[in-house]
Image (cartoon, rainbow, N blue to C red):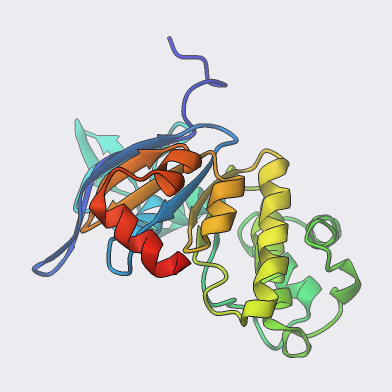
Length: 259
């Protein structure tokens, strides 16, 4: 029997996803260990973001299974078949999976503190003092505690994205998903977000990151998975995948992003 501490936290098994006639994921499988940082890389349209959205069931896979911890995400076994869960049950599962998008998604009419507290109160059912304590702790982790009572419009894009990270962290997730979190930022603001993500990785957070930031992947990831055309074409240690890629698609991508 596999020990729970050594079993993968995430198992993606033969996942397929189509939008009409367009097949976006064509049988993707991989595991992610506890505390592991995995970067998904590849050109636009290769299926990376769709895969990330399937992991927390923002998109339903057409076939295949995704397991986080000991739960099949979005489904349960009934009568020897996988049946899709109702929205309330899926929301309960998502509470354990933090996700940071390209767009920050902060409520403009709420302060930073209130933004970070909101999901804790509505989803985790925390009382306000507990939610506030968790919000302050999360904001402190991303270096923004002094901005707790500021409204989002007074923050830079990098600061808003760090608030979005704090909002996800305050939910105490098992897993953090990042979908190109720096792509909407001006170049001078990218570093502060990547620094916050490095701190998370160093703390032992399990992370799956869709990114084009090659230096981040090289220095922080335990593993790089390169996707092209809806399949995994190369996977392994960042030094090998990014330094000595075997596949033509990987080499062409790196030539474009590094220049």
